[in-house]
Image (cartoon, rainbow, N blue to C red; front, side, top):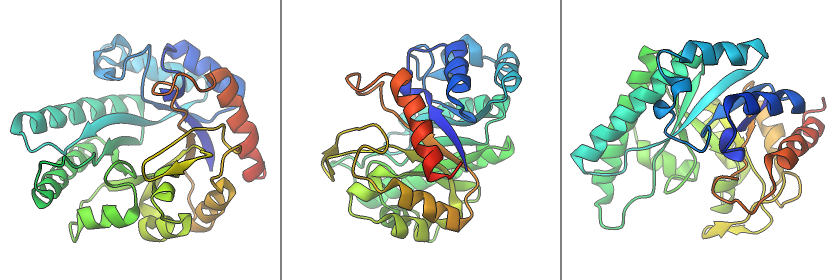
Length: 272
């Protein structure tokens, strides 16, 4: 298993700063969520068709893999115009991932609106996921549904997908969300199994279904070592990616503190 971080933890960094801190701290890869304060990556010159080859060369030059493009795409709305907008964003982000050589894009199921029919919403989400998976497959990019929002647990994901067999769809296991909703790490791994393509690592001292705080990894209450061991037994060979939510929680430690700390803690779990 290798280590990466999401740029959610350094949201104002430019590409050179992202690469610099990754190299200084000993990371193997980077997961891109925000650059220079912008999450709509397709609006940035660095990811335009004209410049994306140069951006890829920058990462390659320093031995860093762009692992995942972590989008905010979600297909929860029943509004046709919004659905088309999410389809367009999917294609734009798949193109960015392919251009950078990233294996994955992340999408959400999203929170189910209280005023929407549950079954109709499930149907729409499945339709969106099938579209995303098909577009991704055409460019050699796998689509990962994150354990988040109304689909935080593997049980909820199974309820959503039912008997639908969506090719090229895998899962991004965020360690915190299933756990704070009462699902053990063992239950999540047993259910999602080999379709886990990427893992978000974070830690929390106080959490419940209603919310959570954030601590430096290893200083909270999540049994991170147990998760690593379960993944090892599963034969997981992907990334353990620090999702340090600095963009959403500006009061937490800066990347200069959280990023090297994560490597130090995880190297102990990985027996490096």
